[in-house]
Image (cartoon, rainbow, N blue to C red; front, side, top):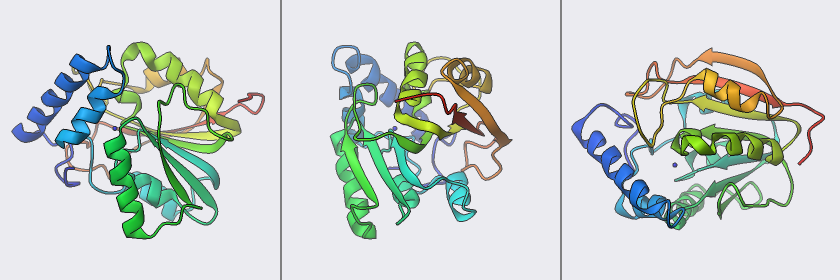
Length: 234
């Protein structure tokens, strides 16, 4: 921000209970102790966003060679599946999460898959205050934007602009597209992303329907890829 991929956010009573418990953790802890609610969720195994595998549309893009090489960032990386899928000799990926428990789980997956440190690393830090050693060529955001309180969305867009290198690419999987109240996850749509990212210096270069969503997410997500204007600086 584990369940099996098929169970991810499916409309079952178990997942609904997990989302309710997650909101309880976040609501009672985040305002006084940022990050503590997410840590407690990971400690309790209350992670309804965790698909237990690589995001299908990202795996498809990697297989087609559609993801830029260089330095990559996955904020809110959780268990690290997408980080490890992106990692390659041509792409060094940083998985960022505010939860130490998530970080430890991701590192265990890295060890099990024998992905070298030269290709992937996992960092415990706050997305809004963390300072990387260099800007990134590509950032992948999925179930991170929707986890943020709506009043942080503008800061999210500005931070993305700071973290990306000029002409860098921001890959967003817009989810959940619906009209439910409250969160996390908070309801989103393309207009919200455009309202945040265009003023921050991003241009939408690709938008399309996602046809291989996991069960429970069909029709609730779109792939949107943005390019940071080359005049921007970190």
